[in-house]
Image (cartoon, rainbow, N blue to C red):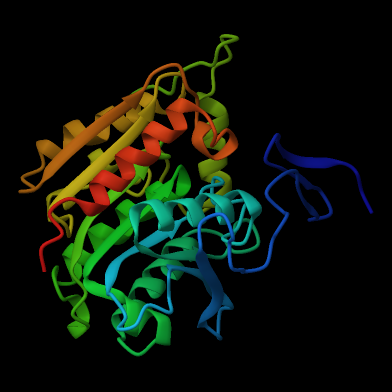
Length: 318
């Protein structure tokens, strides 16, 4: 076993010259459960036996009789397309809390990771997950408890990037009720989205330029990319941006996040794209990238959670 490094993307992962991949974080998992703090039930479901793509489903009060249909939130985890999973304790705890406070059903997608499965695998898996939802009879909990006319997409970092991609594909594929499945995408929330190429990537508190690192992650995860002009990482370069398949978008950014500028830029280019919806950019002062996942007990994390809940529960007429 060689210890010679081919790529060092600390603190996320290292890749050795013999092909070995060492993930430095995001490898812990927890089983589905009944969460006693929130009352949320969860279980794991298989989306594609062929690819092994699965998801964790969270439902508040699944035994309600008669069942009350709730908005469905499809969640895509972060990790630069390289680390983390839908089954990590970080996301399990976050989504238990989100399902309970927003009173929504959550489907957290466990897409395949690069470099073993280079992009666009994660995009394809995530699109397959939404089509699985649209199939109607994909799962008993979904069919009885989730309202497919009130679907939202969200994610953090790379997962926010995926949420944008899937929402755009909904618009391209026919918008509301795409694929004959009756799914209506009401909106998307992108938390600290992983976009580059719109404005320069910022520096951290120590003055370190993170631009080369962030761009290097993207090129490593997606060897077939055209670079920073690729519309999947730089939506401002997408001539079809105005076809985004929902009417409401929220972008959440953090003041100290090196990716903050591209979150604001996304809002600007979306408004100018000819898209007919409403986009809002919300900034949390004094915080860094995905702070709410690592420090969920803070006042700022609670305020961000409240902001998400308000978005998912606004205008929920049926």
